[in-house]
Image 1: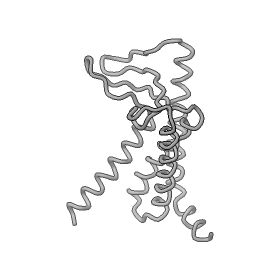
Image 2: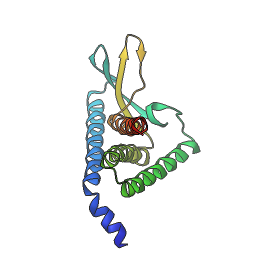
Image 3: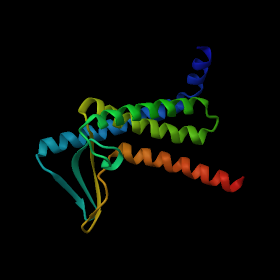
Amino acid sequence: MEFLKQKLKKNWLFFIIFIIVFVLDRVSKIYVIDFFLDKKIDTFYINSYLNFVLIWNTGMAFGILQSDSIFYHFLSILIFSIIIFLFIWLLISNCKYEKFSISLIIGGAIGNLYDRVIFNAVPDFIDLHYLDYHWFVFNVSDIIITVGVVLLLLKDIFSKKNA
């Protein structure tokens, strides 16, 4: 128990990072959901490359594997398990860069997991497009999770090049 207390005390900054990410995600989703409900619109045009459109995602990241079945609950349990794994990784890692990246991923993942539990779907709203080609609709958590994963991949790539 003392070991865990020491690890938690040593990593307080990284806990604050994932809490900030979670709060940013919640605020953005609450604002967008309220905006769409108040305006009673389907799409908010920003410019020729970006729209806001509220989509309720029952799949994985970027709407992949949409499902209303037992598979949805399996995904939720899998995401929760990954969060626990990342939390343990955060506690035992000695690399601050790695801890920072993991903190971003945990904060975003908790944000999306919260929505899965509360709404049975994740609100996605950022629609990037060029002409008639639209990328997957995503949210702030998806962006931050992607940044965290890319940072981990870059660390891995560059550490192997230097080895």
